[in-house]
Image (cartoon, rainbow, N blue to C red; front, side, top):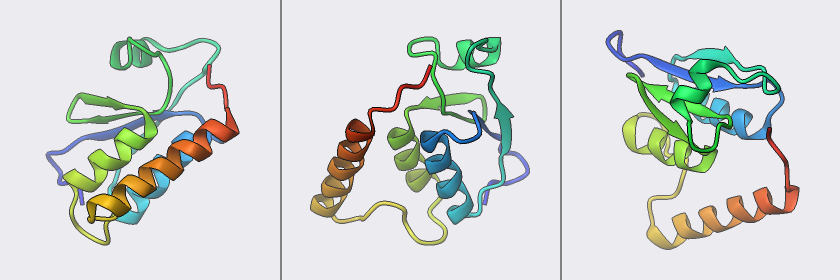
Length: 114
């Protein structure tokens, strides 16, 4: 669990499958976090500062260090907080397969996040 000295924020929008993916991972790991609701048509300065390249959600901010892209965030959560069960398989081949299928589903959904 995140200690009192750790600050974890998740910038996102309700209903985004990419944000939901991160919320599920945080909840499975028992990580307390602050959810910061973003208004996508009018992006906040916070979002633009934390993700200046893509300007998209989700963004996980851990102790003022931002991580973007939901699949990258999942790996970060798994690597940072070892408690509870791992989100991704530890075996390299199975982990690669999980990444492949996650990307495949994302591409097939072809969801556009503004």
